[in-house]
Amino acid sequence: MNDKSRVQGEGDYEAARAYDAETTKHAKDEAAVRKEAEAAKRALSGSEAEELAAAEREGRSHAKS
Image 1 (tube, rainbow, N blue to C red):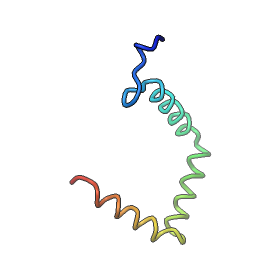
Image 2 (tube, rainbow, N blue to C red; image 1 turned 30 degrees about the vertical axis):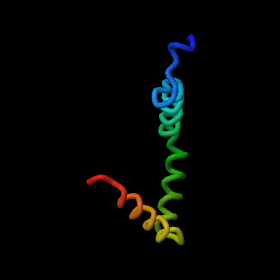
Image 3 (cartoon, rainbow, N blue to C red; image 1 turned 120 degrees about the vertical axis):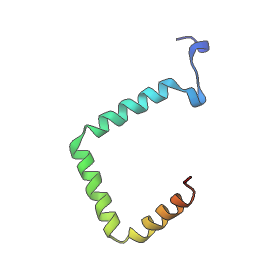
Image 4 (cartoon, one colour; image 1 turned 180 degrees about the vertical axis):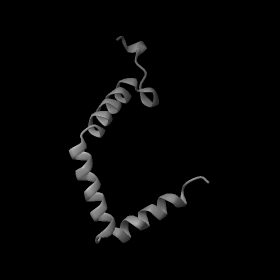
């Protein structure tokens, strides 16, 4: 691929393809997804719960309705 055919920045197709491939690969790894889901569940019910709730409120405050 020559330099003129490569779009970078918001149109970085190579990076988008790599991200998509790795995301798909990770999502198909049931053991890893299960492990991360359990960690998230523990975080939501543990000592991090209030900090996570505050972060969610902050994020939602910036969302468009």
